[in-house]
Length: 147
Ligand code: HNI
Image (cartoon, rainbow, N blue to C red; front, side, top):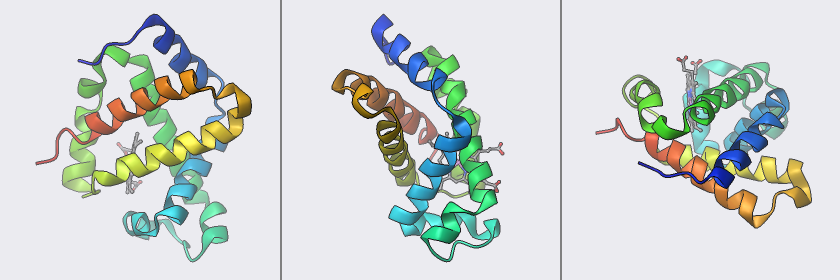
């Protein structure tokens, strides 16, 4: 099990309490689809993904970005059982959605970049270290039910 220090816990709680999900979620997901275009294949039913502008203004993508952040919220609230918390979501992404688990890391990296851009100088190395550890734990948990 991943161990969290008090400082890491408060950093993670602090980052998420300051996040505007409606802004950050869409930006992180659309960035992932633009930077790593092969990730678009899972969103064929989401409408126009023709170019970067279309992706950034696609309301279905925006809504899904918000949904993903709410999904992350569950890990924030269950820091000591992230693996169990995501067991079902991992099965869904594996068996039903057939999402290549490498993509979890790509989306996590895009989220880091968007959060860093938003926080500016406040995104110190210490804050980044805790955030990367949190995201790595999430990525690992989401990849757990693949076989
Ligand atoms: Ni993901 C559905 C959370 C990464 C493609 N995803 C969900 C749902 C949540 C979620 C929550 C809604 C589940 C439900 O309806 O019960 N996804 C997360 C999280 C991450 C993640 C927390 C990683 C940080 N998902 C990804 C990635 C891809 C992805 C990287 C593809 C590149 N997810 C999907 C697709 C759906 C989905 C596709 C179904 C969307 C729909 O509505 O049809």
